Image (cartoon, rainbow, N blue to C red):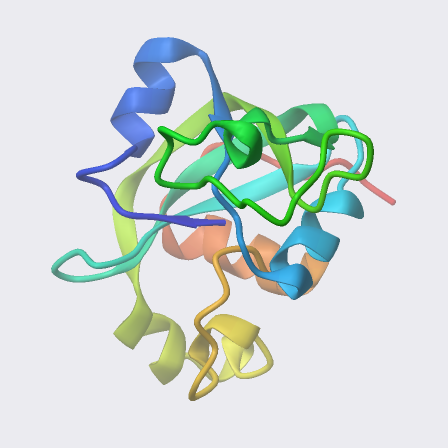
Length: 153
C-alpha cells in the first residue's frame, strides 16, 4: 500500500498504532482492498519520496468498510455520485507492525531479479494498493533488514 510520507508516513502509523486507509478512488485498488482479510500483512510504501520505496509492515485490523469521506462535501475525497445506500468506496484500518532498519527503494526492487514479478516495478503501475506474492514479501523483508517473520502456510 502506497502513501506519501508528508500525508501519512510509517512514523505516523507507529505513533498512532492504528491508521485508516481512506481516499482510494480507483476501482481496481478498491477491489484489492476488499480482498484483504483481518490479519493480512501489508508492505508500507512511501511514494513521492526521495527515494520512493518500502519502509515497513502493517497488519489489517479492520476489513474494508464504506469510506465516510465519499459522502462529505467538505472532503477532498468527496464523490457526489456515491450514495449512502450504495457506497462506491471503502477504507481499511491497519496496525503498525514494524519500520524497516533500511528503506527498500524502488530502484533496488527493480534491480533485484527475485522481485521481477512485483507489480510496483512495472511501468505504468500507479495503484496505491497492489497485491504482493508471499515470496516477494519475504524478499522485501530481507532487503529491509526486517526482524519480522511471515507465518508459515
